[in-house]
Image 1: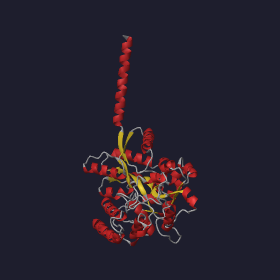
Image 2 (image 1 turned 45 degrees about the horizontal axis):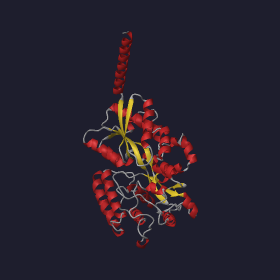
Image 3 (image 1 turned 90 degrees about the vertical axis):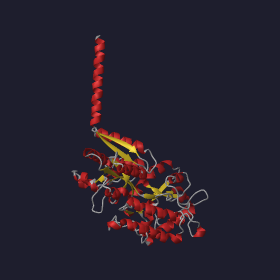
Image 4 (image 1 turned 30 degrees about the horizontal axis):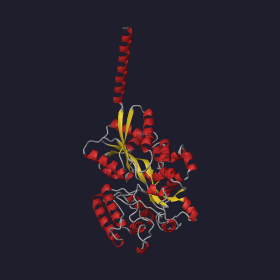
Length: 439
């Protein structure tokens, strides 16, 4: 009997402990976190590690990460929730270029309110590279989102092929074509530009900027799409895939390559050079059997210095959603602050290839040691000197759809180059009509 009573007692204690644990779990603040990816690599494992480390520091918070596909799929999922008035997401990584649209919808809250409450507000803001903050703030300077997985496109080249042929790394688009044509074979493209499909706008911005007129500047009410610089940029991109007999350069497929296939084509030796996000750097370095070189994008004609560099920034920021309860927003901000820390940014950059968005991240491990061993990681950071604000405007999603459609029709060859200016003009009319109410 005594043994039986002890068993009952032990069972009762165990039940009480389970109840206590259950109550504690219910008392936790749950933060639903959506994240996309546009690069190869064990992103889920990295995020899970951050979640565990963060929750160890904040046991009162339960972060629930959910991989939501591509950037576009993530944005569409969130917009569907908002439209249905059934918002699950509390904080998410979305494109930096989604900012104006979500500010317009009043579906996000400004990060500025949390920053202003920090004792180290000025230091926090000053810790980010200015080129990245350009897509975090509105035209009045209020910060709405926080840089996290930021990038620029960069030039990847097969350094072994360059060395064997005695070719210098190109610094403008004339040298780019010369190198691509010299290194092209029947089985190897000279240059792959991943603009095939539905989102050529990002890489197109490199050429527009390098020709002298970025597609956007300070005001989200203005878009520059039918300029002489824009025409020159889209003509150059299109000629990459055109036959030499038709006035093209014939260094890659007509219409460009597919985004997801391009890094694999490069590492398998099917391309001498590619344009791609710095976020693919770690994966490319891990998979290539040759020496991988990286360089600034030589997208424009030679200027006074002989170079034709130009690049947009890219990647995603962290957004906190207005539908979340105030205490959830506060918890979400702690998660954002953690992900934006120098320590996490250093780890994230080293493990993914994304550019660590804070200056201090480059002075702490593991990035500090990594860049001495693999200086390729420094190139994208240093290219920020030539980077321009990434496309964003009022009615951003609609405007980008117009731009993507126009670019795709020209680059694919469905619209001949003789009609390219008319296509850009028609697109500009559509864009201006959407933006008229904001001017």
